[in-house]
Image (cartoon, rainbow, N blue to C red; front, side):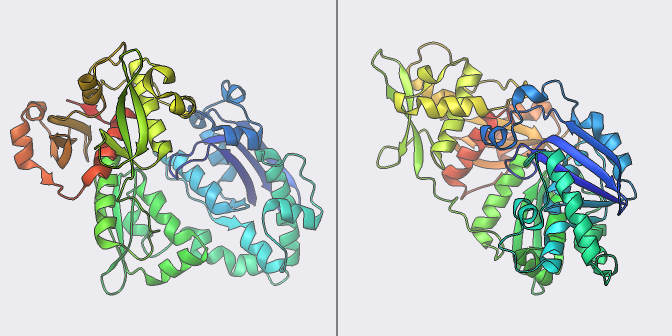
Length: 450
């Protein structure tokens, strides 16, 4: 039995995507014997480009069931069946991540129609679903909708099964790691379904060849060994061991990843220019005597904070505006108003209400209060969840600079900066990048100030 699936999702960073529509057709090799089609309320904003691509608007999902309400139906429909999708690693990963958030380890045997189409229907100009439909005369009246794309994939699977006269799919393909979900490290990472931390992949010489982080380590690590693209296969051939460091805090995992990437430069990580931030956030006096924020390249004048680019700056100012009850016009220079407004529309704070660094941001503020509101120049303690209940991850800022991290079980310790400083693991080469990362995490509601 084949469970042919297509998902539409919000997009964004891996592990942050949310499903907005699902379609499943249960296919016995001859006929569709059952089906399930539903919009899903993702409890977050659907980006404009996704709305344009799929036609699924925010209002369409407001009354739709949330994922946990349809999860049982998905499990029941796919149980004992082969999970089939066009570009299956995407659909399978996003679905597994949704289940992992519920604490459920979703595993199925997976069949991806892309490599099979490449094998059985060679020499096509491309192997996207639209091209295959055009080349093979498959009708798809609902492109980029789960229903239409899943139905088209059923037709494609029917053609592939008919062409497989030597039973390659059953005899070879479905026994590979990419289909079975089993690889040399499956048992080692089995307990890590909802674990947050950082991981290191080593080659035979003990050299780190890849570093990654996630709040769903098992799902994230599986992706390396279940993918079939050229880079993934090369990595699979080299990896000989794996080490995981649980952090509990995704922010700490991001910090450790940054420091390790900067120091080790692993061969399989994509090189990123994330070590020198060339743009800054600057306060500027407005015509009425108030203070507005400017985003510009860094020359001689030091900024309050450094950011990667304009988009990162707009996101930061948008968070400041939302938290302080301001508008783009009252927080940013005129040239940045549209960018901040767009960033504000894209934000999803999920009802979180982090305490403002410098108190309320409403009304006209003097320069010093504006500086302190975005990133205090004095000491500050920020906290996140830790590895176990009752333990907090603690980040220390002194003189406006991130100086290190530690953990604490006692709330009384969080008021004793000197003690925390003695306990902390110092970070000497984080620089402006980590200041920016912590500020962004705070204004996103991921960290709390003590």
